[in-house]
Length: 223
Image 1: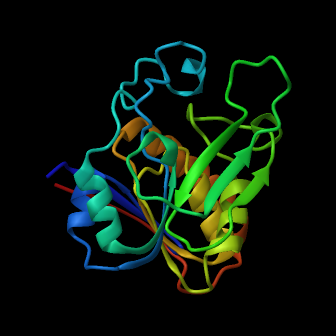
Image 2: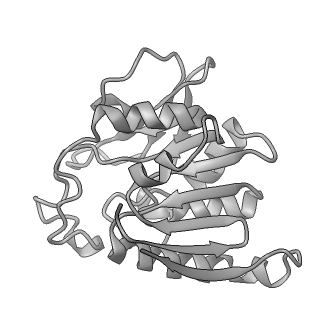
């Protein structure tokens, strides 16, 4: 098992570990909803365009997750939202989430991103330019906090336990903190994990100061 670190920030359980190790520890349907953004297998760092967002020299996007990953994800969660669903072999779904990036004509970046969901609902669309979202970028595929906040409002219920297997920049953690959802998340890359942890602590500090007595910040090392 990969050595891991764990930080608890309020209702956020944030771990630096392999997501397969984490899920193997979990009971069936331990989470109400998994919202995940696994590697698409397009080697996004190879072009060098996004290297200045913490991607230079990183090889995490060289391949898609194995079948076992998706099997475990379905086992430990009641519902799933999987970004990059168009890159994976997933069953048909009538409820796709479309992130319209409102890109101007002529740019080489994708106009939108797609998320597969296990929901039996109508497709939904979120519109926001990445450049008009979070001012500080620490990850090549960083998604806006506003996108996760919108997703939680649309698809999560109060008290739901959320899972994220690829924490990345930590945007989902910030959204879960302000929405009052308990989140368990992991990131295998220590550089990204530490950068995300600092961002999460910084951007949730104001609310944490006035939070309930149960709010805590702890750090543990395992392995």
